[in-house]
Structures are given as C-alpha cells and as structure tokens.
Amino acid sequence: MGHNRRIRDVEDGDAVAITEIYAHHVLHGTASYEVDPPAVADTLAKIRRAAGPGWPFLVAEEGGIVSGYAYVTQFRDRAAYRFTAEDSIYVSPDRMGRGIGTALLEALIESSAAYGFRTIVAVIGGAEPASIALHRKSGFREVGRLEKVGFKFGRWLDSLYMQRELPVP
Image 1 (cartoon, helix red, strand yellow):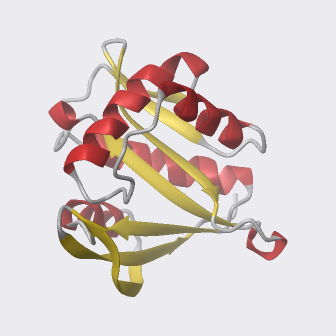
Image 2: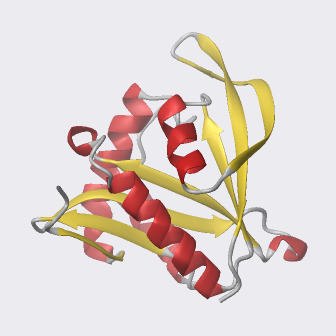
Image 3: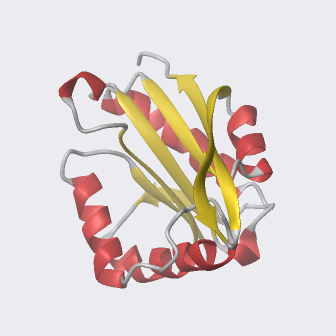
C-alpha cells in the first residue's frame, strides 16, 4: 500500500488533475461550499497565489498520476494572522481510504512548520466525519462550530473548526 506514492511540491502542470479532483468534491460533497467547479485557469491561479509567498502546496502522486493534493494559505489576510495557516486537502474519489490524506497532512504539517507557520486551522465544511477523523489523527482538536452557515444539496450545513499547534523547527 502506497509503496510507489510520492509527495512532492505542486507544479503548474498539476492544475488539470487538481481541477478534476476538486470538481468531484464540489459536485458530490460538502467539504467545499462551492457549487460550481472552478476552471483549470482558476486552479492555476490558486497554485500561483500559494507559490507567491512560498506557502506549502503538495501533491500525492502514485505511478505518475496525481491522487490527491493539500495546501495551506494564511488563515486571514491581516498581518497579525501571518503565523496561522488554513489547510485544504482533497483526495481523488477512487483513491480514498488508502492513507493518501494522512500522508499529505503529515507532510503539510512539516512543511508549514518549516515555512514559519505556528498554527494550522482546518475549517471542515459540512463537518464531514472522514475529514474530522483525518485531522484528529494528526493532532488537531475541535475548537468551534458555526451552525447552519452553508446551504448545499437542499440542506443547511455546519462548519467545524479544528486547530493544531505546529512544532518550532
């Protein structure tokens, strides 16, 4: 399991695969509150926005195929938040349950600490149990919940906040 998996930094050429993975989650899940999948150009712009300040943006690759991705951005854009990141993790629907999310999150924690972030916040749309379990396994704890803040698939959804302190390198 995962013997040919590689976690690496994102490249512009990954934009198509990332767009396809994210589109599935937008159309079929509640982790993202988007309802229309973004275009490849939007994904490329997101990759470059993260790359500009040097924030970690990682992909999991298996047999040369992107099977998932994870990145952090500064939690909010005001200067006092500069040491706090917000994570995003998405795994290809046909590769879920194989440890890819865990591998990505562990690598993201390490690279975020190396970047200089001191805390990562996970904002879990729809309070999805798999995402909660993934984050809990990696040392995140629940710190708050916004109730009925998203409306998708004909129902109201909560957003769960989880947080983890990062080691100082």
